Length: 535
Image (tube, rainbow, N blue to C red):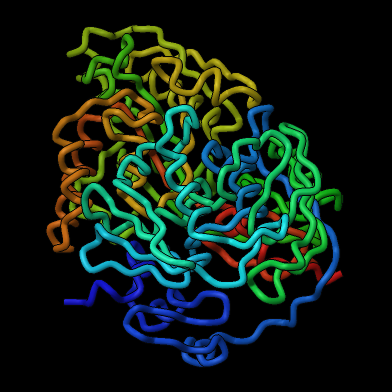
């Protein structure tokens, strides 16, 4: 049995090769594991057979556009909920760990993370790390940053995750201890979330300022307008970041984002539509990067409203979903077929034996008749900000006509969709970013008391399995629990997931240092510390 004291940041990803293991261990020049392995970065590069890239250049400024921005934009990691927020957090702050390209997590502000039982975690912080105002990073900062998520007044987006913290206490000059209420092997990966970025002890005002340890210092912030960060000369990763300044904006309309990229006004854009990829490539000055991921746009069928509270109506909608057509027509093949649960085939706990739900109009008719809802008229809410939802709604409308239900499409603007419409109607769409940890994914979106339980689904068996899986040390048993949870969602939850979308980012070819990180677009939203400009 593997020693649990080996670098806990390895957990949660695919570790099928020595290269993957070594890359997961690497962090800012040194590899440190509780097993005693300590290797310099240049030795690590030789072992992983990485080919050296062109030498990064210092200097330059870029503008970057995501697909969402609103007056609710925030500088508080606890409240980050949209793509622009995630990018902003990773620009200004750092976490104890950070996501890597192997669906795992590397050590970041944490120099080591150790546990004998996956419940009692011991963390040693890096030395010499300072906040933007010059204050040294201390364990007290981390304790404050983690425990504030448990304060109801903070209204943290990851409060269900933080509820697992029994206590977080300082144990030394650079050390702290996290005691969980029950074992959870996913903790190191979960701590890589942008919501768990570290803020200075006692910080309560996030309205206009942000004092972090990240690669960029905040120069300007205007919610719904723009964010400007300037290079942090004292960043804890030597030599990084490379750019002098980054301006971050939100452009909801995809064609406008692409036009801004091709005109040279923007140098990196999030969420390029597959139909725009040829146009971008033909430009000669720009290109696209594709990243396979577990990102999905889902049909939300509220379990507490008519008619979606009828299980036969929900099942009819699921059988009316033509996944192959959605993959081909909407995403030009830049997608993977899903099966009405949120775990992608690339995940090690994916339930590959669960039969794929087919497109079957006859079965849809059967369930509509059983529900007594033939000829029913139902509005379906969609918005450009939920990627592909408007076109999905149109395809669902056509299938509905054939099955015997009339879906009227209510297309609403991107601005304000998440606060005014998401989870507010019987039938609408969500858009969920990739999560490496299934415990985090299920806890945030499917547990009965989850704040983002989109369909209002209540399933006691699912909740019990979720809690049991956290502390299960036997990987085979844990896998079976996650399989059972996927089956429960597939069969009973008011969520329809047709495909997992590949992430497509557009970029000016002068921007270098780009590589895919499956947890999100723009390198898992963490591009800021990596990219440089070959002007």
